[in-house]
Length: 209
Image 1 (cartoon, helix red, strand yellow):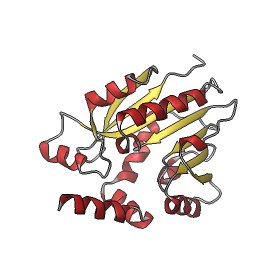
Image 2 (cartoon, rainbow, N blue to C red):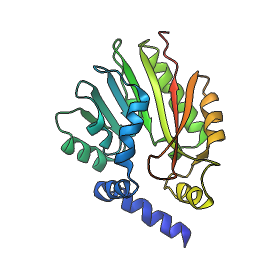
Image 3 (tube, rainbow, N blue to C red):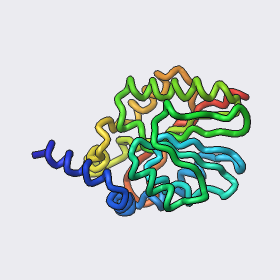
């Protein structure tokens, strides 16, 4: 029964309208504004968003920030391109499709992506992006992902784990995962502004420093 429910849930969330409605229920848009401020993304820089979904984050970015999104879901890409037309560029693809300019500030953004991948896949993805950022000393990798915190009640821990991503991690596991990539990170944890929901935030060290 649980497996049937999970498949049904995942099929529903493949549709952009339902996906965005669920995001609305969890006040995701309200919290994205706060998360963006935490990242200190420079104006006139470029964000390359891998696993971008419908790119609701775009509406919270300064207009001077350039944006490129990649996602394997064609419907998400079409929705993002329609909603934010003229505000960026969107492509159907994964990290293997990503290209990086040789100069200028660049942020590779992995927003709520890693909990859909096992540890080995996460490490390979981040190390691939690391190989790309070495083409530009001002590029960095930023990871934001939901995690289970000891500060949550058991109910909120269960709600967090109910995500369609099969690899929700604890705060401790999140730290271990990022360290296992071999990169240097600044790591913090942020509580949702209104819900007992926690995010891990990892920002790789700038190679130009």
